[in-house]
Image (cartoon, one colour):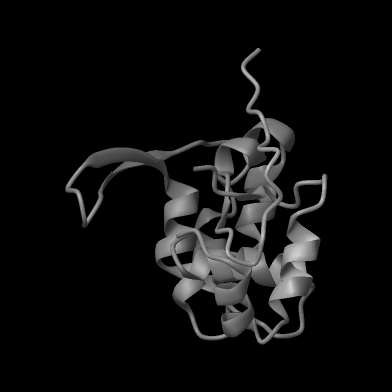
Length: 145
């Protein structure tokens, strides 16, 4: 079994975090149902029947590198459409949910607790303390290297 090793270097407020969807898929069989809860009303309606049963993939062209990648359609719709809708970032959520939503809204580009704190209006130290413990919340992990 191939397991990813954690770094012994403790994250700081300068350490970028991202949503590791491969971790998420390995640790929660219902990840698609959870992710579907973040879809906008339009996509919740149109994708409701297929969320649990189908892992649909599509070809996506990276705008920077022009590399074609197969991506999960549900993730792609969430990140590139639903997370960009007004009201997606809600100030009345837990730190973990707020960080999860902020990362989605920024196309899951790695962000430091300082950057996340600026976006969310939360203290970077609190974000760091929440995300740097031994438990991984919602696949949010520090970027290695």
